[in-house]
Structure formats: C-alpha cells, structure tokens
Length: 634
Image (cartoon, rainbow, N blue to C red; front, side):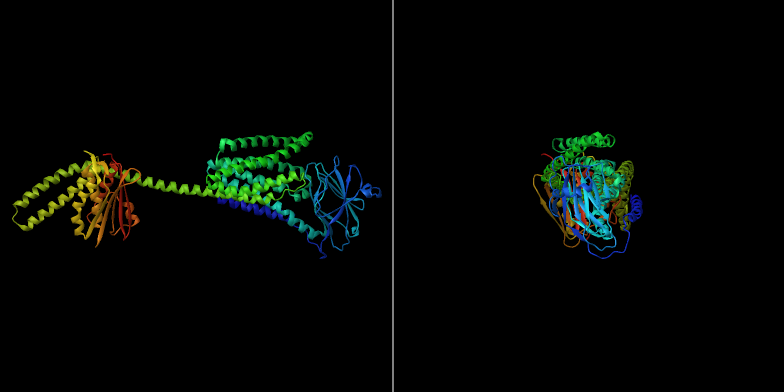
C-alpha cells in the first residue's frame, strides 16, 4: 500500500508542476496606484432582445434608467422580460495596465460595450448565472461609459458587488485569491477520494462496499464544488456545458452514496427506511442522469430536465437530511459511539445545507449557496474519524484473534504432549511396577538377614528410592487413566479439613501456618481420594515455597455462576511470568528432585471433574491457585 501511495504522490507532484505555470500571472511594471471601487450604477430592463447599445444610450430612453448602489438587493424581474442593461462611468485613472474586475454579475449571457464597441461577450447554452470578469481597458477609455447587456432564463438579473478598477496584475491576484479556494478544495477532495479508492483495494473485501461509498461521497462533493467555481466557467468558456453536466452528475451521486454509507455502517434502519429510501434515491438518480445524457442529444427536453433536476435536488436534500437526522438521533439515544461522532459532523453539514436550500427558495433563487462548503469539512472529518475507528477496531480484533490463536496453539501442543505421555505412561508403568515390587521385597529380606549396620543403611536407602519410583509410577498411572471411579457427592469443607489435619505438621516444620475460611454446604461430585491428591499437590507446593512466618490461606465459597471456588494463597517466594506459563507441563519443576508430574496429575483430575485451575503469582510476593468445580446437588 505504501508503494502505491508513494507513486500516487509522485504523480500528483508531477501534475502540480505542470499545472502551476498556467495559473501564474505574468509580471509587468505596475503604477502602485490604489484600486478604485465603483459602487453606483444604473439599470434598465430591456423587452427587445435584439436592442443595440446605440438604442440603450439614446436620449429617448434616458427616463428608463434606474439608479442602484452596492449593497442593494437585485430588483425583481418583470414578467416576460429576459434582458437588462447596466451602465456606469469609468473613473479617471493613471495605471500602467488598467483593468476592470466585475464580480457576482448575475446573468446567463453577458455583452460589454465601451464607446459603442463590443469588448467582451459570453453566451452560455446552460443555466449558469454566475459571472466573474476581468476586462482590460485602455488609458483613453477613462471617464467613458460602459454598457453591459444581460440576458437570462431565470428570475434574476443584475450586479451584486461593486466594480473595481486597478492594475490588471493586482486584480488578477485578487481574483485568484478569492476564486481559487473553490478550485483548490474541489480538486483536493477529488484527489483524496481517488487516493482512498486505491488504498481500499488492499483492504478486506467485506468492507469495500461501505468504503467505496465513502469515496463516492467525497468525490461527488469535490466535483460539485469544483464545477460551481466561476473561475472554471471563465477560463474554460467552451466547456461550460460539460462543467454544468458534471455538477449534475455529482449532485445525483451524493445522496444515494450517503445513504449507502449509512446503511453499511448502521444497518437498514427502523422498518427498513434507510434501505428503502436509498433504493428510491438510486432509481431517481438513474433517471436524472439518463435525462441529463439525453439533454446533450435532444435540446427539446433540456428545459424540462432543468425544472425536474432543480426541484428534485432540493426535495431530496431536505427530505434525505431530515430522515438521516432522525435516524442518527435515534442511534445516539442508544449510545452508539459511531452515531454520536457522525451526528456532530452531519448536523453541522445538514443544518447549513437545509437552511441554505430553504433560504435559496425563500429568496426566489436569488441567493448564492456557499456556506455549505464549510459544513462539508465537518461532515467529511466525521466520516474519516469513523473510518479510522473501524480500521483501529479491525486491527484490535486481528491482534485479539492472533492472541487467541496463540493460546489455542499452546493448548493444542500441550494436549498432544499429554496424549503422548499418557500413552507412554500406560504402556510402561505396568511393566516397570511389578519388577520394582519384587526388587523391594528381596531388599527387605536381605536387610533383615544382614548383621552389618552399614549394609542395613544401604538397604533402607535403596528401599526409599524404590518407594519414590513407585510414587512416580502411581502418578503416571493417575495421569494416564484419570477416570474417577466410585464418585460421590463430596462436602468440600469436610475434605479440606481432613487435608488440613494431614498437612499442618508439615507446614509447622517449614515455619508456616495454614488458615482456612470455608463456607458450609458446598458440594461437588468426584472421588474423595483423587480430590485430596489434587489439593495436597497444590498445598504441598505452597508449603515448600514458604519462608519464615509463612502463611497459607485456604478459602472455599460459591460464585455467581454455580461453581465452587477453592482459593489457595501463600506468601512464599512466588514465580515470574515465564515459570507461571510452564506450570502443568510435563517434567517441569523447580524442585531439585521434582518431576512435574504432581501438577500434571492435579490439572487432569480437576479437568475430569469438569473444572479448571488458574494460577496467579508475583515474584517475591506469593502465589494463588484458584480452582473452579461445578456445584453438585446434594
């Protein structure tokens, strides 16, 4: 993935180096004179679309002109009037390369005349009424009148901002600073969406649908911002219709992809509303995109398409946002963290979007939608946070699964070792035990007949070692065949008290004491001798680990999951993490003469009783063994 991102970054830098010169403004000598603002002009409605500038400037129509100032709202266009004239007088200026900056000029077609000569013309075959114009003028044109013929098919015509006269280079810089923001934001979102799409190819396929919809959301938003920039319509006049067509594509992709993303993240919604509305949006978008393609071929349906697309877009934005807000509020009340995150970002975006669309229609479409671009950032940030959170959760799941897999592998290896030892113990123990017993008998006879104390000592030592070997073989057989014969209902308190009586002398010899805290009426099913053997193995290990003033605490109680819990805790030398993990493994023991079979047998006995054993230990502090055995009814 990093290689792909590196290549993509190199391509982006390369394209940036190519494109940058086109945006550079040539450097010329400038006068240093300040810019001059023209804040007053006159306007006249024109019923005759073929009227000329000479007719508009004639004294016969002097009474038709109406004065306007910067800050006033656009006048309401009379019925059946599609054109209007604007005029203003250029101020006196002393500039090296004088120019006009005409901003927020509302009209579809614009023609500009100076001294009755056409100096600028823009005619569009699509309903885009925003105009930003930089027009070069000459020194001789100072104090002359400028006439602007406007034409539109919509409800508004006029100028919304003051006209600036200044050096062309400084006006170009001013224009670029103001208008390039939309271009930069839109292009950035397009690049981000494409980069994310490349990255998502390498992710788990089960997430691709939701992630791809996120890419489409960012792509469509970027496309809408980019194609509504007046800068592109000014620079690429010949491709204006294509830009308008691309805006429609982006607007028709936005809401279906938003609902698709929500559906993948949060589900179908109550009564399947999210899924149902998403299907409706997909169907409507498909129809509108099809109509937009047809409008490229058949001009007869263009006007119908404009009306349908405008109304549909407004209705979809309002209804879709309301539905999503209600759905998100419902999820927030359920304390869904992802819903809370996206609600914060979406509420800012949706609130601004809905208010602007409503205000757009309240103002009878005499309003430029621009605040929603800022709300976009909060929405995209929320989507990215959710995406990052999902990736982190997936990573944590992978880590968790790998740890579980490691535990399962360890358990499998341990089970295989136990199985091998069980088979070996079962086959060897019987063959070895009988010769040992015979040997022990003869050694006893020889010891009784011997008259030498030294020989008797050797015989006694040999018999002790044979007894130790016999105990090991007994452990082998217990481990190999741990079935509990003659099981009964055992009272845990009574069993532990018997074990206490046996082991108290051993603890006293080691300099320690045994304390018990036993609940009454604790019963389990098992074999008394096997249970004693398991508990004695653990308690003996605790006694042997004690130092001076050692204490062993034995507690027994019933937990909330219908288990009898036996805790054996000491303050002995304790174990580190490595030793703790090896407990119960074959032949692992920290004793000089230990074999490790004692704890192996203990684990197997408790396992046969359908219980489990856990050890917790800290080096230098002590060890605690916790045994869980299912409760048995008396």
